[in-house]
Image: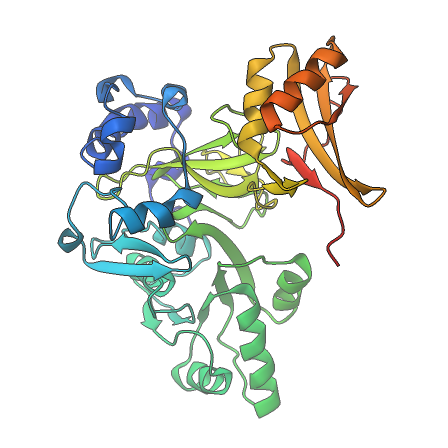
Length: 406
């Protein structure tokens, strides 16, 4: 059915030329937002033209947002405009407040719905929440971008959903992956047939392979999107089913958790996003999610970067002997010791006591010196074990807490 627009199949040079134009505009807009005044004060916006240039800018973490918004309501000083400059103000758990705009497809979801095969001939049952959170509006804006008709049903009330889907002739579902099964099972229970429902666009939870197969067995083609309330569409599946294509309106980096440094090619790390939207110019926004880059171009013909999907959370903070151990501390420990390639903290229980080991990838290193450095960095004594480069697991973890809490 072709592509949403020509941006999806651009050459690398064409995409880079577009980024070189839009990224300085994003940085300039960010410098108008109160929180970035000090963080980006010395930055020349015109000099930030590609992903490598972003490397010198600070990483901003989602975990900071609640505190920032309490100090500077409602958006924590992250917007260049006033609250009244936006069409909507949403609330997500935290609470965290997000802006929204009526501007056509402000969250850039149309590209995903198009990849799902949803067009102006479709009627979409939108089961994402319209209450406080932006999810319902996000998917509705995408449906409008492809010209589809929307039934704004929201979550819950599976019997009403099944009957409405049958009465209206719904062809497509939008919602969380598992709620579609609730509706389908309720329809079977009530003796309701939904023969026209053949497409599903899901987000907000994991689409497990077994569930995807169950939908396929029922004649429903289901694809998922990776999106957040702050960033909108980050990456989305296509018919190729080989990773998620990064959306054209964002720049994605994969960094070592707790740091501002990129992982080695293909390795797992934290997803960090720069949003190319002057309305809400989030710069190096660390999502807290782990993923990795899939090498090569998608068979579907789209040429942007691909992500391997969600691989867990990057916020691995834990307590050892009453002291917090954070990914940022691990990153700083590695940064201070050039002989170290990677490090990983393992925490367990030994003789009813917390036991911490720091696994260090290094070709050569002095164990005694590193143990003293660990005590200084973490304010805790721990053993250090040397490992050859490339031997630590590629799971994005820099803190692996193996203690049982059950």
